[in-house]
Length: 243
Image (cartoon, rainbow, N blue to C red; front, side):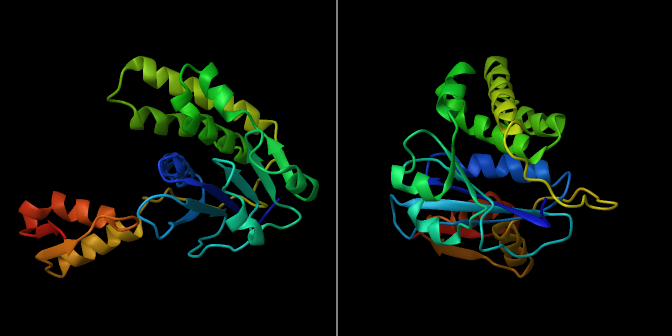
């Protein structure tokens, strides 16, 4: 058991890292302290990004260099994170995601995420499978997690909601059978917190300070600053222009 747990997701833009992160953070924030950060490659297109999610029974405001659990979204997302692995780190991914040589030196567990997504009705549900897998591994409250799925997909057809719930169940069962990553102690008198990110804080601060003009090019991780200011442009008299 751990004082804090560091989980890292690694994959290309568009593979769903943000979806899995949002599911996990919103769910974990109801149960424990959580801190997360993204690492985005400095390219217009291409390159592997990563997300670190750290949880603890105590308030935390920083990341941790070493990784407890690394989830690979493709077969070229390991190398950049290799220095952060320890003998206790466990890597999860599809067959062929790491080399035979790496498997001799690292702890790798082959998980058929894609196949489980297909079993749930659609290969596009793979991110929900991965969310379920991590939830099972962390022993997250099932109903708490499923609430997030229902909230996210509430405007879509019932078939899609049910498919994602099935995908979560398949992932949760697989994760539940893995070595548990649990905290040494649970938070005492924990009150669920509202999830807040740096870009949200930046926009609120800018509006409070009287910002009235922004010219920028939309590129991660700053795109949401433009979009949030655009949404509030009429209310607060802000001109937002794509440079």
